[in-house]
Amino acid sequence: MTDHTTNEHSDWQAKQYVMFENERTRPVRDLLAAVPLDGARLAVDIGCGPGNSTEVLAARVPGATVSGIDSSADMIAAARARLPQFRFDIGDVSTWDARGPYDVILANAVLQWVPDHERLFPALVAKLATGGSLAVQMPVNLDEPAHRLLREIAVDGPWAPKLKGVERTMRHDANWYYALLKPLCARVDVWRTVYHHPLAGADAVVEWFKGSALRPFLAALDDAERSAFLQRYRDEIAKAYPALGDGTVLLPFPRLFIVATRGER
Figure 1 (cartoon, rainbow, N blue to C red):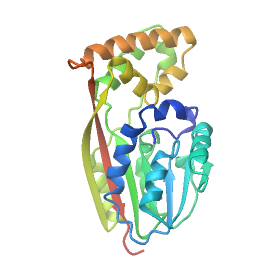
Figure 2 (figure 1 turned 135 degrees about the vertical axis):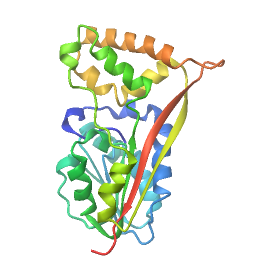
Figure 3 (figure 1 turned 180 degrees about the vertical axis):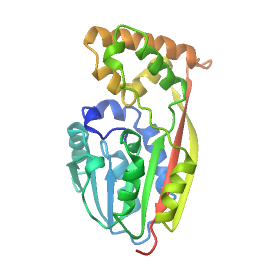
Figure 4 (figure 1 turned 90 degrees about the horizontal axis):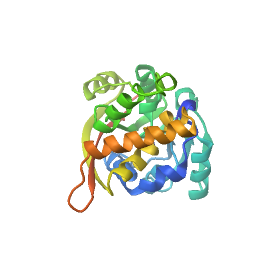
């Protein structure tokens, strides 16, 4: 969810995010299908967003105590309204100090926003019970046209000084995460999937990214700059993602999945 946890991105709007809820929720279903969940009693969704990923988690661990955290008050309000039976708290993943031990820690489309993975991932594994799993899904689309265009437009316009350093730049591959986690875990499963989401033209592609990657860029601009930036981005998106005959754009979206299961303490 959920793409959002640091304070820098804490003003994300749940309504915008869930415009494409079915598409955004499919990866967490695929992720949790690979997690060993037998006997899970305590589960948490970190970066829970509006609760769509928490809902999937809860369905997979019936009878478990389930909770969620997110840095966005708007997202937490949406999650509480959606799933009033579970506890949701405002919190920053990078400083989250709950001890657990958890049978499942779910991080769906959130850790790409959080720095220092070399420290963060081992810290999350340390909160697992024996046999517990850290289940992570992250977009790995920084080299896709939608992100490349964001970076190019950001440095080529009157808004350039405001947008310096806004882009997300952290990149680690599957080998890096496996090497980091395997010494700490009994089993580490890593895979990559490219989804092709059918969207209703270039405008829909822009709306998709307004709920995720565009947010920090737009937040730094005033109304006039924001409008000009979006128009230029929309024009470039239309060129980069040509529509099919019926007007549909298939948006390629690569994602990295990690299930790290802890052995005996």
